[in-house]
Every structure is written in structure tokens, then in C-alpha cells.
Amino acid sequence: MAPGVNTYGTVAGVEKLVGDLVASRTFAVGTMPSLAQVEGILDDVASDLNRELESAGYTVPVTSADATALAFLGASNNYGAAAVVLGMLPFGGFNPDAAEDAQNRAEMYQGRLNHALKMVQEQRLKAAMTTQRLANVFAGSQEDEDGNAKLPLFKRDDDFYPGGWKSFTE
Image (cartoon, rainbow, N blue to C red):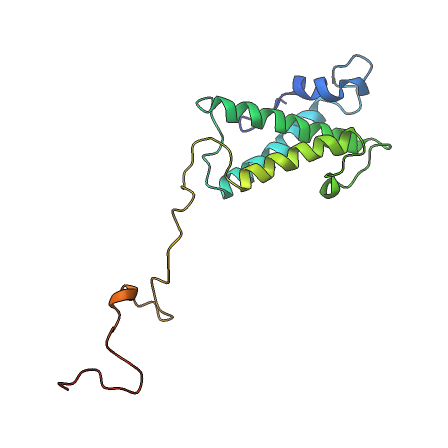
């Protein structure tokens, strides 16, 4: 199995970070973790990245047209997968939510993935978007509680005051 088409990282990228866990520095069928496990982890981390990208309004998957964003997501995918691989080992347990103050490699890699996810959430990634940042922001409400369209705010019964007459000619 190879990493999916929506995956930004590579097995070679993970091997660069945590290849020292296996004797040959290359994940294979008989290593712990195996090549298939590392590929699956890459796909899982990419799913997390794509979920955040999609919810922030980015086009998923990010394509080679956005080269800088693609390289950033590739590195982030590798960091996240390396953190999961290190977390699989008996000595590598850590809390991924408390990776701000890195005490070991797994926490450092998880911190880099968390930073990438935060950048995506804050829409600080320069990549193609399906929904622009303020596309769905409106000042005031467009409809009342019954679903009827409201008049613009500054034209809505300017001369009417509760308990008063609507006009002098009525």
C-alpha cells in the first residue's frame, strides 16, 4: 500500500526523522513499525490536515500550484507521522495535546504538527480557497425569527416609536 493521493508526506520524509528506530533506517515489512503501518499513519495525519483545511475554506487537497503551502503541509505531515511512530513504542508515550513544552522528539514533532493545524485554522496558509475568509460574515441579521427578510437597518421604520403614532396623517 502506498500513501493516498490526499497525503502530503512521504515514507522517506518520516525515515529522515525517525529512521534510527530500525536497523537499516528504512521501514520494511519486518520492521517495527512496518512500512504499511507508516503509510497508514501518514494517511491518518493527512486526514487531520485535510479536515482542518476544508473547515477553514481551503481547496482540498492542496495542489502543486501552491508550492510553498504544499511543501509546508508535506513537512507537517511527516512531523505528525513521526510523532505517532514514536508514540507507538513503549518508551515513546506522550500527551499530544500538551506538546507545547517539548521534552522529547515525539513532543517536538507533535508541536510542529499542532503549529501547522493552528496556522490552517487561522487561515495563514497561502493556498487556494473555496470560501474566502469573510464571505459569510454579515452585519446584523438578514431574517427575523419567522424567516421573513428584514429591511436594511437604517431604513427600518425610522419614524416609528413604540407606543406612538406611526404617522400624523393616520
